[in-house]
Image (cartoon, rainbow, N blue to C red; front, side, top):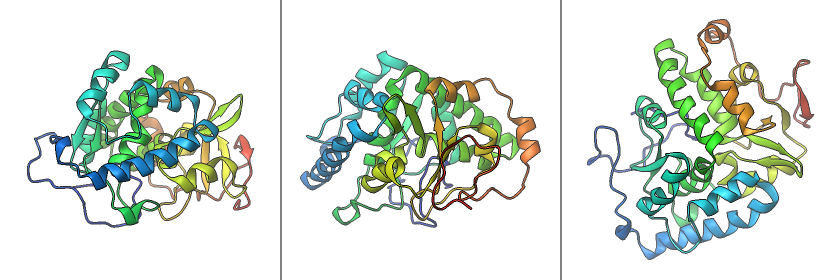
Length: 290
């Protein structure tokens, strides 16, 4: 097992999922009837408090997508019912997986327009901190934007790019793109900066921090700059990259041959996230800036 670049993990961990009965592509049955009332209660708690933050802090496309896929606070979603609503919108579906899956399978799923969602949900004492992505992170954070046609096309392009990056030995560089967009991306809107990254939107504290805190740097998205930038896995982010639209994100990745870029960056040390470069398009210079 290896950690896919989607996973906002905090260092080494023991995998939480049950892998004995996985299919060759690492999918499993959701077995919705096996969730306990306590697990549904955890979903309700997490959903209710995060949904209350979305109108103020999330990209409008996230709010629209959450409604489009039919999720609500009452119970853990049935994946099959979600797919009935999601597939007609963008051709995507979600697939149940036991937890983290190997990179090659993760990329293959995205390229085939299927998003892996873990079937297990965190324990009550983990409401505010979790070292491995669970069902709530995967679903609430990622699935709503799969209902957006432009973002959905970007995710498919990312899966295809991931397969090529493996052959080039450059998965670590492409992982930075996922981290700073899909997990911890910000969007400029007429109402101000809004979050669209799953790592932000599934965290009560970072949802507010990412938009309002004076600490982090926020700079305009540039794919080479992103690939050169290290990220934090042990605290809130010190750097957020801001896109002007989801079209910008898609155009930066679709059909692009990253080979020359991988060769140019090579194995050079990453830029610390506290660092603001003279060439950056600075949105806000944080108090952590070096």
